[in-house]
Length: 147
Image (cartoon, rainbow, N blue to C red):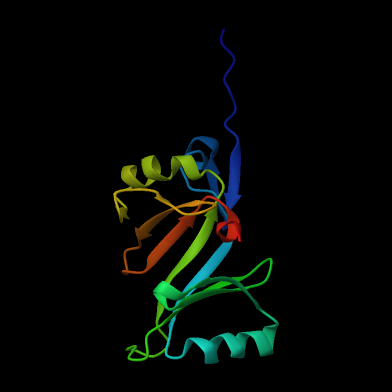
């Protein structure tokens, strides 16, 4: 007589999910960053520096952009003096533990993937997707892009 294997259950948001389902999800470990359009880049950098002590992590003058923050929080600021509507968030990002499974899992769930897959940066890769409401989400291999 064969022994029946007990499925391990995981509790997420008060729902029990068997291990087989858990292996088919992306394992987001933290909020990685928020990408924001700002009217005045220097004014915005000063605001976040003065209020939170954020440092400039990377300057991107060709894009009129700076990445600011600390070891745990990153804000990617892109200047557009004519931005509409005010308070626009371009996208938000998650660090994903099982990065190499993103493409397979997203395709299996019919998630819209931008740029035909991973985008290579200096110290990390990212996959950009879209949620059902039109919010763009960046899924990052390395927290904070390694900055």
